Length: 400
Ligand SMILES: *Cc1c(COP(=O)(O)O)cnc(C)c1O
Image 1 (cartoon, protein in one colour):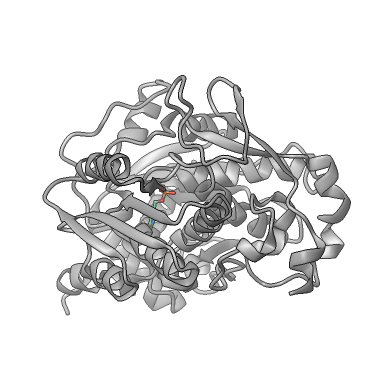
Image 2 (tube, rainbow, N blue to C red):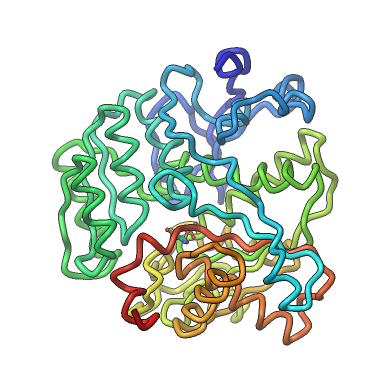
């Protein structure tokens, strides 16, 4: 644990992701008050590069806090960790050859605490909330984020309130209760839950940690980008396929690549970022295809992949920008395709992925068929969670 005190956060300020206007990281900010867009954390990367060197990483703790200099928490005693991050990047030794590919990799986020990569975002957000004296948190969530917030809040001794659509997977409802959160079920969509959570925040002085509406969940998720590059020996893959709800992960990985270039770890080259959404909820794919910068809300969202059931995303323009600048693309897959892919990833690799993780494999197959991804390219699929959180949804459709 010595490295947690030796290496310091080099956070300097927050910056509005649209206008560039700045704000202090020493106060609990949410969206920019001027334009309602997300703030992103900025660091003194020249200073960070002095200690955050490729060589220094070898001796650091195997979780996402190994990148301390580019994480937002200043006093290490505020870090709330359950061992999140530094997840395996598996070579898909059977699935790759089955698809005719020479270099297929799966980043398995399902092994994170609470069974999904939401652990990364909430470890960062809850830690920073504690540092800023925010001891009552609230959040709307269709699933895994609520469980992660509840777990980290429990570990920190912080109060947690959850607003969840009543059709969220059973595991997510049960885990919140087990972690001691106040669970409020909402008859409606995630946007309705968001509105009610926002009202509760105002009325009862709760801090709303909805993704990108506070600046630090994306800092947790960006560590996936650091890890992929570190695990590839400081090389970048050709393609990263990401199952997109609000898009925090895509935004985070894209931000990490930019930071790593400034740290001198990589050059100007970038992977093509592929945004996958469900056919039944694809606001970002629609906006990308229409050539737009912002996305219209998606009416009547429907998919069994609860993490991708996000009809409107506050960081829409950041996702679309990352996809375009990277030379990537955006596409949809159906629930049936996802289920088929859940089965394939499980039987070929021994990884039982969330439907969202399955979606990345479905997308890969479509992109191989269309020739947009080559069989000899190095491709990373993000399996963002474990299927074990979706047994009530998956059991019947897998025929069990
Ligand atoms: C939340 C979630 C997603 C979507 O993540 P974003 O970064 O918000 O787009 C994907 N998969 C799983 C399992 C999730 O819980």
